[in-house]
Length: 433
Image (cartoon, rainbow, N blue to C red; front, side):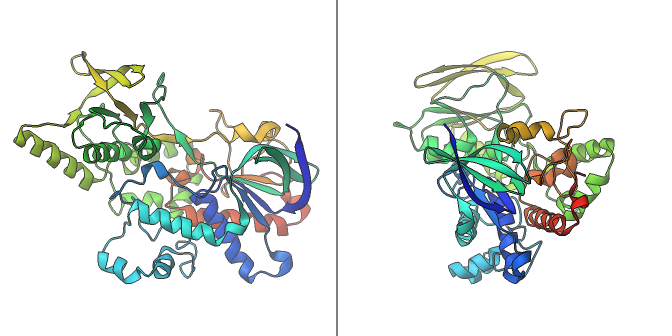
């Protein structure tokens, strides 16, 4: 399919993807432009392959709450006076007083998604939905970006590209998804497509998403047995204590970036239990209480297969058979299930799938990981006409907040300010590094 060169303007910023990260950037640009003189304004455009704004819709489980404070919204840590804040959203929706009376720092996931949609609607002029970026390459004094929309390719030009393509499902080696084998990212969509209620569901994983999937399936299908399989002896609680949460502070990004590789590895090891394979304590206690009550009543639908792993899965049209090994003894059990859900985490999408020839200009370290400047700009092996910035996929350089909501407002401001500073600098200062 030949690309059509639209010969439109050369944008200051072209954003790839429009989830919470690039939404925060769009807002940062909008707020800058409100007070900027004409020559200092930023021209930004964003392309999103989804048909409308959506953030992990398959996990918008009723009753599930956010794991971050509402104050870590799209703007507040960067600009507490912003009218794009979660509090401004509540005021616009007529729920500010009600939320205050609710006495919580953690809104429901459904409500927070509504906040994100509300904010996205306010910057909708900068976004093109149902538009997939398929190639990025340098041409003269700018990047040319090929975008597929409505069965045609068009080329858009930009001085800087900001890649925020989000996360994708992470699966165990050899695992394959199918009609009855899902990843938790699709849980609500796939569960709603079932013709008949399942008799047995198997959930693999030990983190927050796994516990939420177990809870959802157990509540939604009251006659089904739900088996939770994980290699630990039980769900481990997330460390959300005040001192541990400092690993998500904006200052912690500076400190992590300046640290040696050895210190970075240590910090990641020390604080993995703030984010990875951990579960909110309230949900752990609810699930335990429910399982105990079922034992009391003599009808156990909720089963926890601890210290166990799935070693084989055989699929069929109406379900799957999972072979589960109990690690201490090696004993194996076959579970015939109508539904098997892998709640085994997510990983950053590979930006090189769309960077094309430009990817060869991006510098890597000895482990093959991208070298990234403090301002989230990819270090390049040769001069490019502008810069490529990453929102996500920088955990090895910037720490745990790389792809999380916690630092999104500050990160967006830093990227915006970096682009402004580089545009104002003399030409000799615009070389890489």
